Image 1: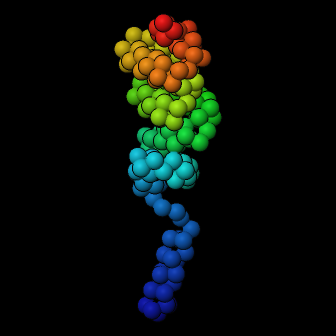
Image 2 (image 1 turned 180 degrees about the vertical axis):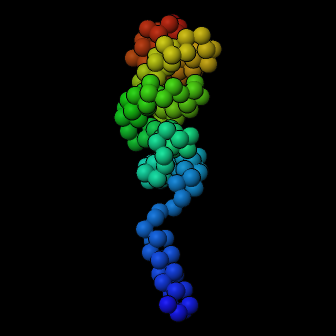
Image 3 (image 1 turned 180 degrees about the horizontal axis):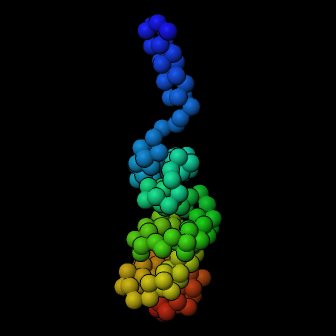
Length: 164
């Protein structure tokens, strides 16, 4: 083959490969966290979902994207995000910060019931961790300010003073 034909074939192959692949998954995760910070929850959810397809399951970056997806979903589907997060958490031995970040997102979206369910799970997983009680007490304050008697009852059942 002549050099010009080789260059044309190489360029054609490069263009074909570029058009088949999406963005770099690591870049998508970074961009999705930026979207999450900017309150573009739908954009973050879409970005994390797409990035997960290109990441190795079990890798730190896959876990980071999966946790980001739950956080983004906490605004569009709080019950689903909570349920899926708790299953994932049991299977992956997550850190306490992973729980508290999702709780903060749920509280930000006024989804106290889901946040309380996660605190309940945290109490069994991290029984001696003061951060769990910090989160529970924060939820008591939020439930009081919202006048949410059901949330206060649930928190009282977990040992938090909330119905006084």
